[in-house]
Image (tube, rainbow, N blue to C red; front, side, top):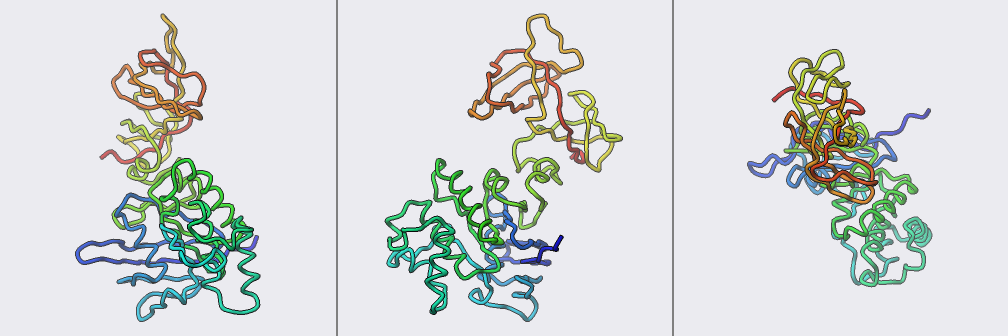
Length: 350
């Protein structure tokens, strides 16, 4: 198998603004053809990281490498227009006085191949037949695809996208998200996008880097990040989670839910995470006993169609959540038996 080329590297990169340390000692790499999500709350340093890659900000320390070339570091600073970076801004930044074709052609050198490349990326972005239209004549999703086509046209080393779906309404977001991934994949593009939306990051990216306080807490494929978070902070931020105290030893956790499989480096007194879908519920009829399961009372139910979230109180006191499929649900006040499927992730007890 051919080893994939590394398309960018941040090594020990830091950047502050006055007393505020926006990013601190960042280390991050991405292979060719992969999509990376920078995920975190507002003010965590995501956009600053994107701007450091683009060349809109200079790092105070560390190195930025793109396509095998150092573009920022001690004694080196390559300006944005010479970095082979494509940018899709939050508001798309289309030129309102130019047609779709003219917008896409804007960053291309004048020559015989220019028209052919414009037609190629318009087809790639599913914009055939729209080249003569003005931006205001397009829907939000179409405008976004024009911005993406313009970024892809010069065949950049990486494409950077700043909160690309924030201007779209909820109904459009999921569809446009899938379209964008298809376009980036078809183009063989290497891309980095900034988001605060967990669902967006997990569904679109090959790799997700969780940022908080200017640092990257964990960078991993979406499945690993969700099921095996490195810290409690990551576990809490990425998806819903139940946290319960317990004692861990030899790959087992003893807690209020019984004796369950566990993973993690900690032993002794720990705090454990179980995702809601790991809790399976069984309705108890009058007089039924739970047996080896734990008994609980349903407190509330949130139904989403494709799934539902059940809030319940164990007889021993803790309040937990269970996520089930979209079938018939449990009602508040019902008695249930709770069993654990899967394993808990253990963290040091705070």
